Image (cartoon, rainbow, N blue to C red):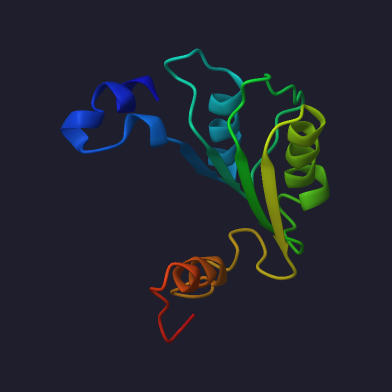
Length: 134
């Protein structure tokens, strides 16, 4: 995050709108960034999709807002053991969190089975750029 902010002008990014996104094991890494930061490295938001979860979940009082998405039929990273634990930890700490659990999609929310996975279709539709295959 510090590197992104230090090069924001060069990369045409907003310093105050920089966050982190992680999928599966990368969700574990993105969450670590959200939980272990200083002023320069604190992300403005964190988005975790079917994230792995650390054993200890103690978000700091200045943790960024969190978005979570996962499929209920995910056998690799069951929501009750992972995404729901993140959500609960954020809410118990009085932090902003939003969670979506989809009935189907497995691990990866369907990315392996379709060229345009369902979650991306929903995002594309919401932003007005939906395709016919969504």
